[in-house]
Image 1 (cartoon, rainbow, N blue to C red):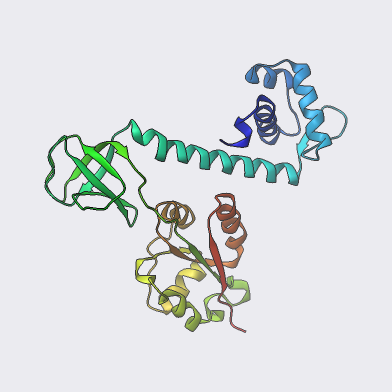
Image 2 (image 1 turned 90 degrees about the vertical axis):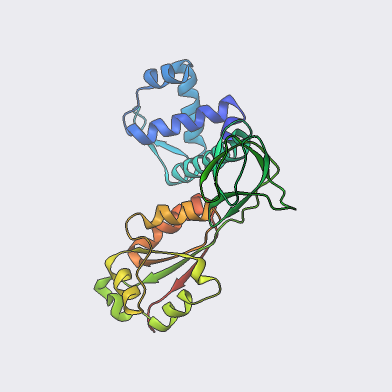
Length: 266
């Protein structure tokens, strides 16, 4: 379970920090108390703790601001909650909900079948030796979508890895300062044909085109890389340097594995 859910105190600290971040520097303690179901006095005590812990600052006149450490704690806690919610949705609720899979054979409603995850898609088949299984809810032909319930076992899914390739922004040379041989090497590395290629920034797009590769994703490449990794798909994200800090912060907050490659010449 996520730490912020294990006690009323941690849950309250998290929610109060969210309120401070959303409304700083003016925080109406009475309104926060009503939303959290505690007294204004309790809110005041919590805020004193947050100030003492260095997560919040105050000017002494009921004006509060979240600190850098407070932002980091909030991000870590939010990421932990997100991971916990994903476990609940993908591993626990799966036992009582209906999942959709691709039928790899003609299937009959009511029969138990094997389940496999490949390239982020769930497949239902009749293979032997597969740990995960489920019950088909209706007849389906090979290639059709099919509903599966009563999931049992673990569906093997390795988390995808993200390779981030940094491209100089236009002010310092843009695509003209990119080591195209190194970019080609990244694009032709092992299993690169199975990787999704994303792109952030015009400079990155031009660099990819110079080596004859159109990105699979341009708009929303950051979100696509995160979702792909959670579904077991590795990706390469070619990004202009000014977008790198935000991208890496997102990957780290999600707890995803990544490698950073600098494509700048010299």
